[in-house]
Length: 133
Figure (tube, rainbow, N blue to C red):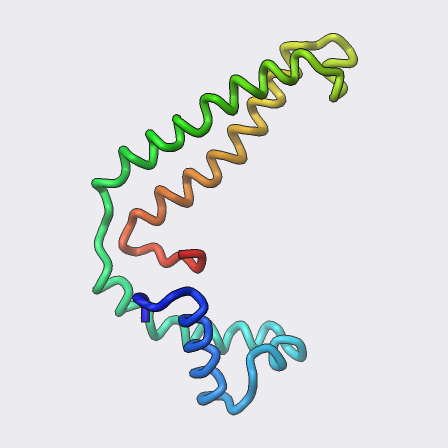
């Protein structure tokens, strides 16, 4: 199942849903999203043991994930600081609070990029099943 593309996996799950419940997931979801979600999760859960047994930790990729993160974020942070300091685009700059403007921009960029980093780190574990990959 996991060697299939995302679209193929989706179609396979929907086919199994139809076979088991004699209805279509999309219709059931519109009528009763909680029950439909519970039903599809039962089908998905049948694949979890197979996924864990056939997957492996990717510890060797950890350093690459951090290096990629740094390579991506460092120019972005420099750009954010320089751009925000020289523009009156937010309340901090309008009040001549240049340092607050830069700090605001940096913290926003960091929180967004760190969320993505945590997902990438989690996906290195054999126990994480990401619907996006």
